[in-house]
Length: 93
Image 1: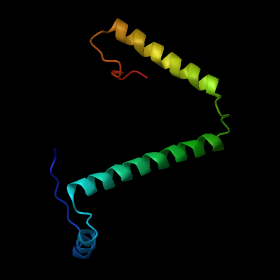
Image 2 (image 1 turned 90 degrees about the horizontal axis):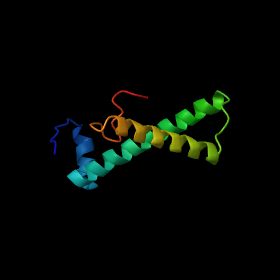
Image 3 (image 1 turned 120 degrees about the vertical axis):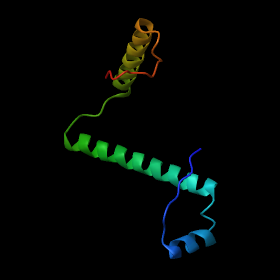
Image 4 (image 1 turned 30 degrees about the vertical axis):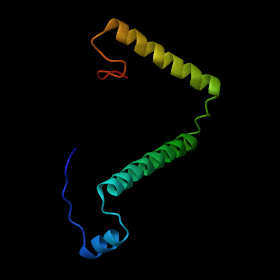
């Protein structure tokens, strides 16, 4: 567990305290929500770029084939290098 210290305007702290937003649990939830929102926005931004580039959408069959190929590649990599875990790409694409 990490302890952090932050500086906030007094008025904001008073409002947050009155709303019950200064507990560890609530602050953790607020941070997790913010992280999910940013990830969602990044995904939407990537989708916009793909659309603007005119890249055609993949079919479910194409997506399934890509996932299977990636899983097979990882299985082969782990078999060849047992010291690596299944998610340890060791800098490989």
